[in-house]
Structures are given as structure tokens and as C-alpha cells.
Image 1 (tube, one colour):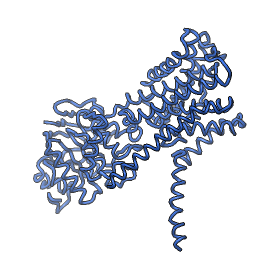
Image 2 (cartoon, each protein chain N blue to C red):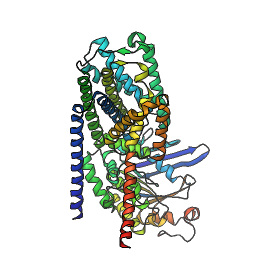
Image 3 (cartoon, chains in turn brown, cyan):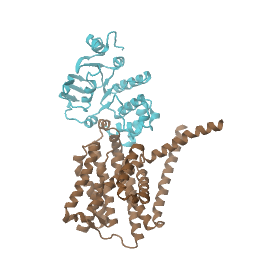
Image 4 (cartoon, chains in turn yellow, blue):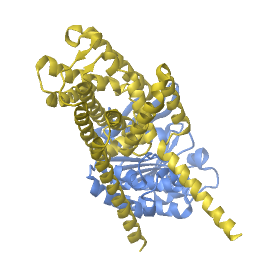
Length: 334
Length: 243
């Protein structure tokens, strides 16, 4: 009887979740037809950061590795896609996924050296890798045009509203792919293994989880997704330079989003990315030079006071409601 | 012969944690490993589980030398370990933690089958109701039970159990004893480290007493527990094989 009730409640919860996904999907598809250029751009940036959040989620949320310098793959993907297009004439629709593959290949090449490092050492190594790639792009002037950056031909022509809408839908498609990737990964043997490693490395080793192989796959998947998004970004903006696509601030913002998303592996980074974009539009752009300080402070506040992210706020509120109810009842009884 | 130890040593700097242990263990036997604190029990277990590399000597499993093995290789060869302090992965439910035992190591079951196996193992240790909980919400006794369930899900050839009964209720100790004996009857070889000499006296087919990293006596329980040196070094006067 009780099992039957639990089963029905679980089915209902699943149905509600499916309904929520469908409603969110419909709203996101309909949005470009209701928004002006400015808000369309804000939403597109939100979608981009949500996808980057999923890339970071694979490393931080599933594997438990603080890949602070993961923006390196954003830069690698952006440059690879741009160079393939400019130097070899490969069309953007192929250059972008190839950019993702190049980023994944760079991650695999660096894996042997970097994945033997733990915790903060790995974190520092990823930052160093980012600076190394930044420097490589800067000095390879003949290929990359150095600090002057690369200008790409427009991929889509038409009214600004049309161009913005196209990239909105491209980023929406990428987000759908990244969401599915995180869900499938979490439910796969690989996801189980990664969570086992994250939860208790020694126990995972004793159970026979292939630690290096799983971490390498996770890192390559994270890098590939981040690189793919870097490639789309390059063609969206039409201009990239080393300082903007290897900017550690991007990684910091993405880590903040993943932390804010808390235990919500897929929805967490999406909600946090849009919240971040809204705050950015409303307040942070006014901060100018103080943005780094504000971002750093926000990270400290989340890590120190809100380690479970936004879902923890919901939990607190639910507990408050729960603890208030009996008192109200007893007051009524009195 | 499943396990063979040949003059196995582990030195940490000047400390001889294990200092030349030799012995053999046949398939389907329970070896009780006892000794005072610091006698080298956990270090020896760590070496058999390939978590610690020996400083000298050799360990053979089913005739194969284990030198250079990783813990993963040991798990794939069917060695499972239950820890003194239960080791669970945060972020996975109790059921998922137990499933890991069937999904990795020597079994490599697909998830669906691993889930069925994990549920059966949890039911066997009386913790089926805990399946969807976070292991860190469970009591120490329950977490020990989850650890035991994961070991069952691994279907090991050689099970290393490091003080898994410490802090358990009499009822749970009896249940754990039953499970250990059942595993032995199914052909699993077990090395059980316990402080509770009475339990070891009841279930072990043979006992190894370690003292200062050396074997004080390795033999049948009645003979070992009656050994005056064992009584003096570990059990204390007035102790009997019944504990």
C-alpha cells in the first residue's frame, strides 16, 4: 500500500518535472518573438553561460575537480573554429564542432600531466594552462594575428533582430545538447564512477573505478562542450582576441553559476546563468572596474554562506515554513 | 590455495609495522586476524588489498604475484574490502553506493542488474528501507551495514573485513556473523579483523595473532586462543575461546 503510494508520488513528481521542462522549452522557443534586440542579446548570453555552466558541471559537479582555468577550452574552441574557417575555408557549421574536438584533444593531451594533480594543485595547473595557451596565441602572430585578434565574416545576414534570433536558437540548441549530455552522463556508468571518485577517492579506488580514464573522459567532454560554445561565440560576435576569450573572469563567473546551482545538475547552471545575466545587466555593468571585486566577493559569499547554492535557500525557506506551521497550529489550539 | 604471504614486510621509516609475515589461506576459509592496537593488522590488510605496497616479501593471490598491483587490479581480481570507518561516496544514495560494488571491480554489471543486486544486498543486511537516503544521514551501525551490503554486491573471491562489527548492536553482530559464515559456505575466503575475540572464536576456521608486526601464532582457534603467549600479549588472563 505504502509502496504503491510512494510509486504514484514518484510518478507525479516525474510528470511535473517533464511538464516543467516542456513549459520551459516552449517559453524559450517563443521568447525571441517577444523580445527586443537588447533583451534578446541578454538572453543569448544567458544561454551561452548556461551551456558553459554544464561544461563546468561535468568537471566540478560530477567529477569534483575545480577546473578554474577551463576557459582555456573556450579560447581554444573559438580560435580553432575561427582559424579553420579563415585559413582553410571550412564552413562555420563544420568549423564549430571541429573547434570543440580540438579543445577536447588539447584536454586529452594535457590529461596525463594534469590529472595526476589533486585539488588546488589541479586548479592552479588549469590556470597555468590557460595562460600558456593565451601566450601561445599571442606569439603565433602569423597564424593568429597576435593581440590584434581575428575578424570573421558574418555568418548570417539580415536585420539585427534576425541575426540575434539565429544565434539565440543556435545557443538554445547547444544548451539542449549540453542538458542531455549532463543527464545522460549522470545516469551512465561513467557518471556513477565520477560521483564515486568525487565522493570518496579511496573507496572508489578500492571498488575498482578506473580513476584516470574516467577523469580524462570527463575533462575531454567538458573541454569539448566548452570549446564548441567558444566556436559559436566567435561567429556570433564576429571578432575574437586572446584577452577576451582566454579571460579568467569567464571561468570565475561559470564556477559561481555552478555553485549557485547547487545540487541541481542540469537546471542549476541554467537558473544561475540567467540570474547572473540579469544582475549583470541591472547592476554589474555599472561597477566597471569593480566587477572583478564584486565577482570575487560573490564567490566568497556563496562558498562561505551558501555552499548548497540556490536550492539551499529553498530548503531553508521550506524548513522555516515547516517549523512555523506547528506553532501556528498550537497558537490556534490555544 | 587462494592467498599466500611470504615474509611480507612493511616499514614506515624506522617503524616495522609488519615485519615478516608468512602464511597461507585456502579457498572458502575464514581467517580471524587479531592482535593489540598497532600490531599491524590494518597495514597487512592494506597490503593484501593492494592499497599499501609491501617493503619486502611477496603476496600471491591464486598463485599470481600481486607486486605492482593497483587497488583497481585487486578489485578486478575479486578482492573486496569493508573499512573500519565506513567509506561512502557523498552525492550518491545508499542504493547507488551499494550498486557501485556490482558495477565496478570484478563484476561490471549493467546498471539495471546492479540495482537489483544492490536491493537484494540491502535487504539481506536489513537496510532495504534506507535505499533512497543519503548515507551520511544514517547512523554508524547502519553505515557499517551499507558497507557490508556493498561488499556482498561485489561477490568477492577474497573479502577483507576491518573491524566491521565494532559499535554494532548484539542483533547486528549476530546478523553480520551469519552473513560471514554464509559467504564462507558459498566458497568466499574471508579475512576478518576484530577486537571482539569471542566473535572470532565462533566464526573463524583459523586465527592469526599479530604482535608488533610479527605472527605470534597462526592456527586453529582452540589452539591459538589457548596459547599462553597469545593470552599474555593480547587476550589477557581469564580469557577463553568464547571471549
